[in-house]
Length: 234
Image (tube, rainbow, N blue to C red; front, top):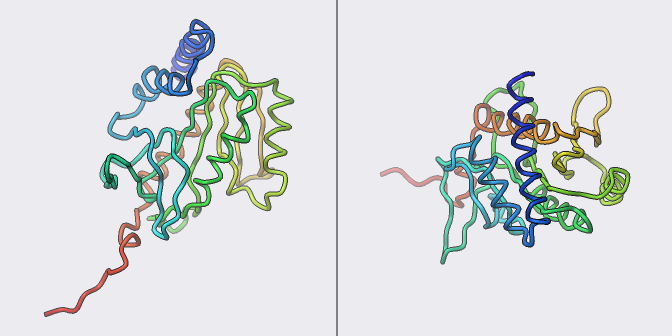
């Protein structure tokens, strides 16, 4: 067994067992806390992990209140009276953690919609790199409806979309299935996978790829957040 297989299956089992032992989490924050402590804080520096607040782009658009934001620790968080705003240019990924997706799919995807509308305010360092003008956004849940019901609900939510850029990049229901949005290749679109015990691993591989691309190969356009970028010399 490859190292990723063993690790992510073990962590996924631990998360699902905790969910079952608690007879399902009573509050969404309990699900988020367990996901943070058991998984996310073990694979990413805690300085990159932020909760709550909104994401704002240089044009002034802002998202709904975010769940978990993987954010570049070298960029500022605008905090006023304890209310945090994250610059769109510093967001590596957004993750919304749900206890379950029963009756929650439209709500979860509406939050994704509010983030997908934002400009990323970044430019590729490598000119050959595909310019993706939207944030990587994921939804992770401990439980969800039957695969056919889930798929029908997602497709209904996106029925009138003309492109893929506003769709969630990843929806992961632990121990069951994954939805991925593919932008290139022979068959771009929404892909629904019965990943079972490997759901967390498949989700992480896609999340890590997005974070690495943002960190290594894109530069934040910080000056875009300012109206005045030039001044007379003296």
